[in-house]
Length: 171
Image 1 (spheres, rainbow, N blue to C red):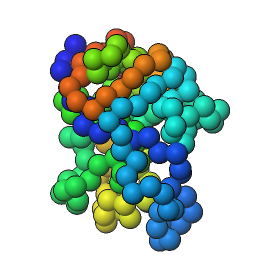
Image 2: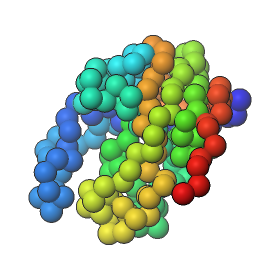
Image 3: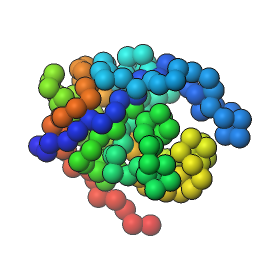
């Protein structure tokens, strides 16, 4: 187990990055970041746009490492701009695709299956800044399935890799 920090949590009821990036994000709350998020096994974060959506069951939560944010493009970049759900400091989640991990924010552990990379799209060049899509390639976070009900909190947490990812094949 390693000590990490949950830096930000985002629970967004609206899919704000739809249509053409040149048209800008859809209207929504000024800030959808929260300090507490309820997690439901195989469903996602209560109140989030992907909660209980059949098409997103294996990708209802997206976890990202703060160390991979393109702060050289925008020093204030965070979850509002990247539209990920959980921003952690202290572990490279992108290196763990295929693993099962747990995150314990003090209210019990919540296990996640880290299923696949979250590929950055052209919207990143709008919400973060020019060049962000390229900067986030292979560092855009991981689409996850929560395996337990629980609670995530901003602040110190314990992170554990429960099963190692399968070795990546070389192309």
